[in-house]
Amino acid sequence: MIASLSLILLCQLNGEIIVRGLRLPMPGPVIGLLLLLLLLLARDRFVTLARGPLQANGVESASRGLLAHLSLLFIPAGVGVARKLDLLARYGIAILAVLALSVVITLPLAVTVLVR
Image (cartoon, rainbow, N blue to C red; front, side, top):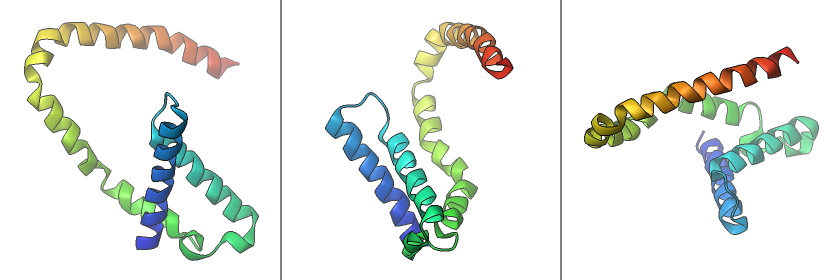
């Protein structure tokens, strides 16, 4: 379990290093997830890689444990919003309008993608 969590965090760290080193306009954890996906695909394809944390559902069980407690990761974001309630009160209508407009603009595009 510890080795699997370490592998997940190592992939995230490598994603951060790649993003900051190449100055890519995307979050490092996204690259880290892609690296982890490549590792898991390689593990399934090449039997010799299925050792250590990559063997026998190690990463999968560790990720299930993280997902079981995912709601705890939203607490800092909730506290951040609660600390800025004055801004939310001031710009709340504008934020809601932009969110509604973005949904109205995005939905037809999503329907077009699904239909094709």
